[in-house]
Image 1 (cartoon, helix red, strand yellow):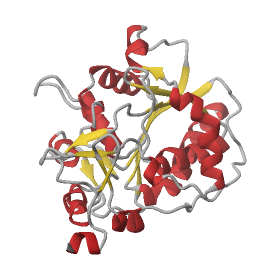
Image 2: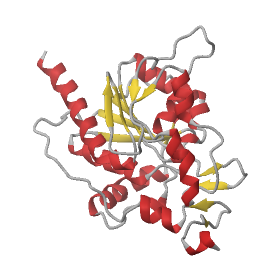
Image 3: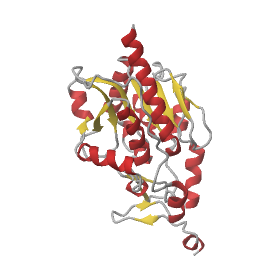
Image 4: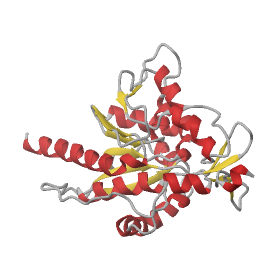
Length: 292
């Protein structure tokens, strides 16, 4: 009764899962974003140089109590950085593990934000029919394609499948060897676990790196307000720490961090600054290479 009175009960969905409670939605989502467009003085002019976006194709995350959380990629974390990267002159190839449609947390979509909705509409057909990472891997990651970065947006959907997908791991290791940028925000860095070494004798490619990411301790607290219908079965921060990755933030805030070519953000609150930082770093690299 108390939970119902204060809007703490997760909301059941038609597919048998649960979306966040009314209180959680009020506290954690908004109809608009803080996206602020900027004009880049020297944008990318190479239309063949793209960003490969790794999204989830799964939408139900099982809790310790057996209940399922209705999730996917967070739309703000996915689309706001894309706005900045597009303004910087980059286009995108959208991928999921097997080419099934991208799953978005539509309950978090900022429907009154004209800029976000515009880029969502522009890329909706690509989100509905993305490329397949499995097919890309079969073709040895097709070196005829020109990428400057891979981008892994967050949302709890990034915890489902991606961290254990061999093809995702091979993609991340391929990008690392090619010296591409790796952009990721919130729960997105969980996908880096797919590139973990097969045994203890091999070093993790991101050992010694620092990142911003959604803190495990906050994930442990969110069920208290009904954001999720139970506790997570595992925590990606713990696993990354064991592999030598340090998370620099302790709050789900606007923290962004760049360590070499790994650029990360802490939460949806960081999406705007994360997008600007990512775009700026990519352009600095391109223009530096051009000037040499």
